[in-house]
Amino acid sequence: MSNSMPICRANSTDDLELIISFGYTPLADGLLTKDQLDKPEYTAPLDLAFSPSSGLVQITESVPPEILFC
Image 1 (cartoon, one colour):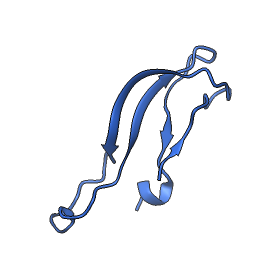
Image 2: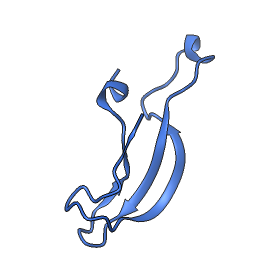
Image 3: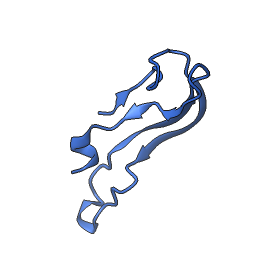
Image 4: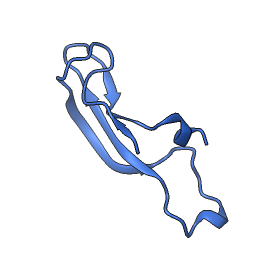
């Protein structure tokens, strides 16, 4: 359900270079309650990339607000 961003967020070039991939990661502030432990936990790819043309370091995925802030 995340949205991949294979281009630079600053200048829209497609020169992103992967720095590190943390794999699929749960949401940072999405701790499960005791009642939720038997249900699947939402995860999204967490990849850090660098754009040489803009100098920007960015994550390449965006989690939709309706999932991130529910």
